[in-house]
Structures are given as C-alpha cells and as structure tokens.
Length: 166
Image (cartoon, rainbow, N blue to C red; front, side):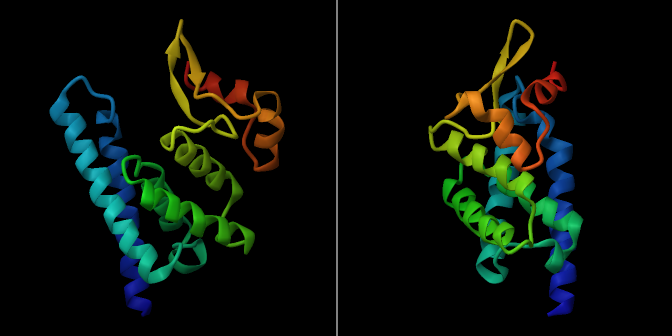
C-alpha cells in the first residue's frame, strides 16, 4: 500500500505538471491545441475518478501537500466532467470538515462546479472574460457579501484578486 501511495503521489504531481505546461492552450486560437487541452483534462479527470473511487479524496496526509494540490487542480479543470467535479467537491468538503483539506481550494472548486452547472458562483473566483481591460467575474449569488465570504476561507478581497489578471 505504501508503494501504491508513493506512486499515486508521483502520478498526481506529473498530471499537474502536464496541466501547467498545456493550460496555455485552453483558450488557443488553434482548435488542435484546444482539443489537445481538452483531451488531457478529460484523461486526467477520468483518472481522478478512479483514484477517488479507490482512495477517496487524495489528502495531504495520504499523498503529501504537492500531490493533494495536484488532485485539486485536476478536479478544477475537469470542466466537461461534471460528475467528476461534483464527486471531488463532495469528497473535498468532507476532507475540509475533517481538517484534512483547505477551505480556500474548496471555495475555488465550489465556484467552478457551480459555474459549470450554469449557476451563480459564491466566492467570485471564476472570471468569465475581460471587458475594457478589466476582468469580469461570472455572476455571484450574493455580490455584496463576496469579500466577506472570501475572507472566511482565506481568499484575498476580490479587487486584489482581479488586479492580478489585468
């Protein structure tokens, strides 16, 4: 089992590295590059589904900090696999409740899943696009409470966050 977990940690960090290398293609003008990105994230999403079925949520305690963050990244980018995203969200919520995962990453996954379901986000972490040089978030459920909700999970205020995108 120890060997399996070590191999799993390596596999997850390799997936995140591949994700980082190719994420630039997500919104490429070249359909072939976009397709390659979708293929990669779909393959990673499928694999995360298998991992969750076998191990539950890959927490830092199980696979280490870096691999746990990698699992979150894979879930975050499984945009066309809502079943995988929802399952990851559910397992990650349980892990956060148990103190085994961080509420900040959970908030990002929560927003991402809601946007993919066609619902308003909660924490304002997902950006729909840029208008007149300024990032525009997907609609939020309670826009007047966004900064308060963000602070509760350790995310910087919205204005500071979007300043990084401009």
